[in-house]
Length: 367
Image (tube, rainbow, N blue to C red; front, side):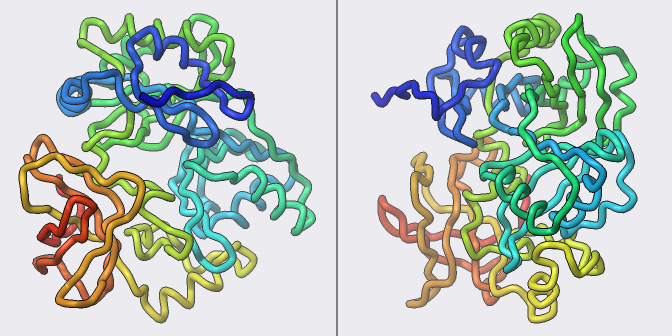
């Protein structure tokens, strides 16, 4: 059994001690932090998110705070999505790209004020990247990582749990909108969001000293609804068609290839990072697209460290980027990053570590 060796390079979240107390047994590394994966009962954790309510330590979802006179300008320079109509209290899902149009992150951008934004990021160093772009453009802004750590409450009963904590006003929050508030003296922002399709909220803790207190308040409020701990790395995310940037994408993937084209507004200003390249990709057409795979066989066989090649005839036509057992489908399912010559309904072969497996290609999501 491999243990995580403590080091100052690796940070726990404010909820880490609570997660350990609730039985955390498996974790991974994300944004140089410890991300809980399982509490030892994966089947229970899966069905809890599908049918009930689950609480997740997602403090690894770091924030990049952008403040200053030119904060709004910088946020738009970084984003190929039009943010001109974004209101205070609103969040927007945005694919961030480099100058070549390659997808490097997909944060939710939260507008807290006209001159203050958070980029709630996936796994990559957007803070240093944003600082470099700001300096390059000569913008009057400050970028830093604030003391903010999300705790997710996810599942069909999540709204009832969060309403019991904050009041019924949260039932009126639209998707990705948020409100800054307090809970028993704990400063938070509450947003309807989360890395599942079962519904839920993220509670952005703004004081890391109060992580255990917030965890226990949520746990107690969720007790009547049989809440329990879980994590965003379950079969549910694959069944629901959610993309993991850096897992389902590589260093050549653009947003159009992974179903994010609708979040790219080609008319944004010419100074937006990557927009010139994205316009050309849109004109020429992407070379790959992301589709679902249903694999033959009934042996649980998840994908481990590496993408696995997909073959049609004697030609490689793409890669399987993730694979996991679906309890609802009772099959191994995954995503294929495939040549646009491959279509739903095609049958392909995946060259797996355990041997070649036939797979049916379908549209995403599975559910």
